[in-house]
Structure formats: C-alpha cells, structure tokens
Image (tube, rainbow, N blue to C red; front, side, top):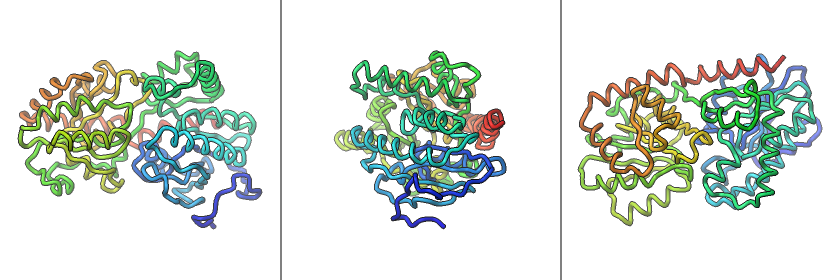
Length: 426
C-alpha cells in the first residue's frame, strides 16, 4: 500500500521493497509526472511504454513539479507498472540559480541514498541529467552495487553553464567537475545522447564510440494529433481565427534567443492580423511580458504552460512555430519542442546557428526555414512570405507531420531504447 502524501520516504528503510529475482531498471531524474517539463514527459512516456516483462521498473525522483516546487506529490505510488519513489528535496524552484542549486544538491544526496538502497548486482540504472552531474552519483552507486549504468544526456554540463555564463566556479573546481563527469561517462555501459552534434562533443572527451548511442527525444502521436487550425479551441478563444499566429511554446530559458523574436514583433506591430503567442514559462517569460507592456506591443500574448491534455490543441492554434537556441549551445542542448511541432503538423522557423543540427533537418525536410540569431529583418521577411503563401504553409505542414511519423514517434524511440537495454542486460 502506498504511503500517504504527508509521510516522507526513507531511502534506507529496511524491508521497504521485497527482493525479487527479476532485474531492476531504475531511472533517476528530478521530475516524474505527466506535467509539461520535457524531461518529465520523456521519462513518463518511456516508463509507460517499456513494459515489465524484462525488468522490474523503478523511478527515483523528487516530489516537485517542474512548474510548481511547492507541489506535494505522493511519496510512493505505482505508475504504468513502475514503482515511483519520491525523495525529499528543498523547494526553492527554478526562478533563482541559488535556490535551484540547493534543490539540486538536496536531490543529489537523497536520490543517491535511495539508489544505494534499491540497486542490486546486475540491475540497470538510467541517470537522466536533471540535476546536472547526477551521472556521477549514479556511477558511484553502480560501482558499489555491481549494477550497470546508462547515462541519458539531455544536455552537457558543466559546459552548458559556461556557455551561459552561469557559473563562477574557480578553475580548480571546474576541473574537478569535468574529471568526475568524464569518469561517469567512461564507466557507463552506454551514454544515450539526443543528436549527432552531442555525440560528436562527447566523443571528443575520449569516450569510446561504442558507448555512445543517439536516441532523439520524441512526441506521442496519441497526445499530439495533427489537426487544422480552425479546429483549435485555443485559437478560437483568443479570437485569432483570421489572424496569422506565430507561436513559441515551452520553456523560455537562458539557452534561447528571444531578442530576435521581440524585434520582429516590434517591426510588425502595425501589421494587422499578425499575433505572436508565447505559451509556457521560464527565465525570460516575465522579461518578455514586461517589455511587451512597456512598448505597448498588443500583438504579443502570453499564456502559461498548457496541460498535457490541452497541449495538442494549443500547438494546433499556430500557423507557424518558432524554436530558438543560442549558437554557443549548439550540440550542448537539443530543443525538444521541435518534435511536438512536427507532430502537430506545423511549419517551424529555427532561430539559431544556420548550420545547426535541427536547422539542417528542417531545411532538408522542407518543413520550415532558418534565421540567424540577431537577424530580425530576415525573420520579418520569412513571416511575411509565409503569410502570403498558404499553399507553401500547407505543404510544409504535411512535410512536418511526415517527418515526425518517419523518425520521431514514441514507438520509434521505445524500439531504440529496448535495443540498448537488450545489448547490456545479458
């Protein structure tokens, strides 16, 4: 029977779980719930889809929601055949780096203790990189317990922090972090990365190629079915039936370039029928809202994260979507929002490195266009061109959905994950 929501989980409690002969597959990630965090969605989808015929599934996570650090989730529960174990953490949330660091640190400690209690010889531990460097803790656990490690890298840290100028660590401390991180990658059976750019960067750390596996993130076609714009309830509620809707949906974090998009909205402020819709949250959300109010940009609208059930309808509200990434982050981070856009059957404008991995993909598939960071004039030209060419929009939408069905469905990702697990669970 599950503990009540108010009873803390003690990771060292003897007899907490009956031992069985079946191997355990243990995921470690700070978030686990069907909320709108990309990493949480990926893990939720994978746990629900893997099945329990080969492994006994466990998830070690915190009691937080991505957008609500004060949420109180059950300390223990069952989900999709998996046993969920939620550890105690601080609850400062994502707004300030200092508070986020304390959340990371407390989860780092409590999840390590939980994994030490749970893991046995021959088990497989999958460390998903939230918090950063959780691979180091997972590597220690698997070495002590005789388990096998898979690192699931959603980004490359601490290089990402350096690129964002978000760290003030002295050189010696940074060097120690790199040594520990690189060790955790070397001792892993596999390091699952999100693209070839990330694979190349990890390979430069002298990690054997045989230990690297590309499995892109995905979207679930049962959740994100393609539907026409006029069928979107959100579009109708916004009174945008006759407008050209440009949408950014997801985390508005430090890795993204919003200045180019903001200047384009300023340039198009007097063109009737063009709406810039921002749906989500993150470090840039309040700044953008403030600038829009200050500049009286009535062509910009802001909405919070949409629930999983409403996400498909929200994405369908757009004529075209925008995905942006600072060039310095290329290969260190791979935006997952692209797969939802493709699933929704919408064209996308990539703002970032014109030679970046997703930029090349979009051009080759004929499902969007690419604009360099800072080129707001080029973005305005692209938006005007798209708005004036409904036939192109229709063709690009079809190409987007076709690309999704061919490469980025949940079923495709699950097959790849099963092959990885089969290759090491011998």
